[in-house]
Length: 255
Image (cartoon, rainbow, N blue to C red; front, side, top):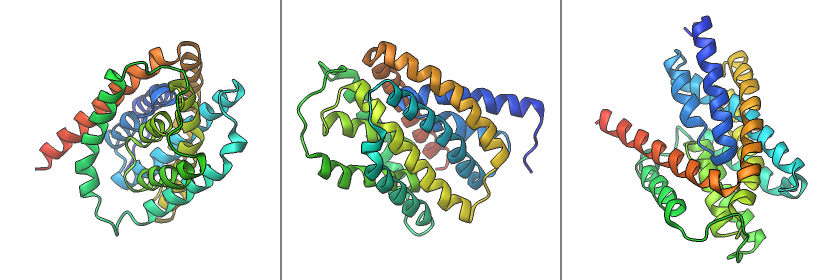
């Protein structure tokens, strides 16, 4: 049974604030909040579904912050967001029918690759570059793939959205970060709708953490817009590396 002690509430709110800050810049906020929810006593299914509740607040706040600064037109992303929502819903609904172990084995490799890409790629800054595929192809392929993954597995989805915008859409780092947030929000909601049907999100906990996420995301988005790639790149490298290390450690522990 989940115990609502003052210490646990304080821990969850602090974790959500930090996660909102990190997630608004480089993604990976779930790396912070999901383990803390489980440490606080939530069951795995409760933790997964509650994490979607609070994560949606942070993603929405970051999306609005970047939109207000003129870095992204949220209306132009409506179609892509719907695809992300639907794909995430499908992924979450199929979580018990599709073997996720191969994905979990591959995920640390992908995350290390992302970290190395952003750490050593030269001339990777806030300047836009050549677009490698059309916007239509990007929306119809990468967006639903990342959304489906977000519903099915989850960790690292924001980083996958972002690297797609950088490598395929040709966006600069800050612009790519701004464009991931609405899609990440949509796939969070899609996964949440599916989890709510089969699991039991801790709604009060999720909403309280979500409000802390809002505060962290607002500050994080302001920092990212002020500093740009100079803060986004190292934070993305750090979060991807830590998440990969955590997943590898879990595999070792479980045999």
